[in-house]
Length: 199
Image (cartoon, rainbow, N blue to C red; front, side):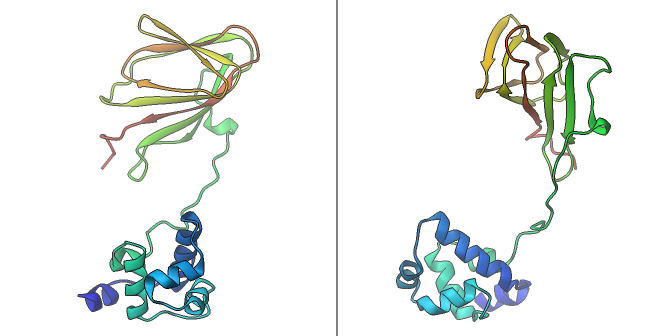
């Protein structure tokens, strides 16, 4: 069974070495501690982490067992490891109305790989903005206020969200933001479609 997993996976030893090191650091575990638990020598683990040695399947099995993960998950690097993108606000991703005191940039759009829309917003002067009900059921909006104070009107409720605070609510309810006084509000929010990922 081990051989099937081993042969069926494309081995990435750089990934395995960095994974072992990340695992140790996340668990505040020394090389010696992992060596004692796995039965693999300290020097061997260090050389695997640094990419100086490629481990055998027997060594990998011992390490996987000590780390409480399956051998297959251990040796198979996740897809999209290098799929990294810096998200920046720009004139091209503004989705708010032109001339509005509320400026909103859409940084990501829901897709096959992402179950959420992600936005950055700020007020250029005190004012308000309204949102209609999201037509997709079971959507949730998460808002984090970085600066200023945001007043959220949700149905008959009035909620004050201060800098450093976050709030979540059903996006299927019409709502509005207001920033009437104090520092101009800015922050981020995202709309989650967890049960409605596009196929």
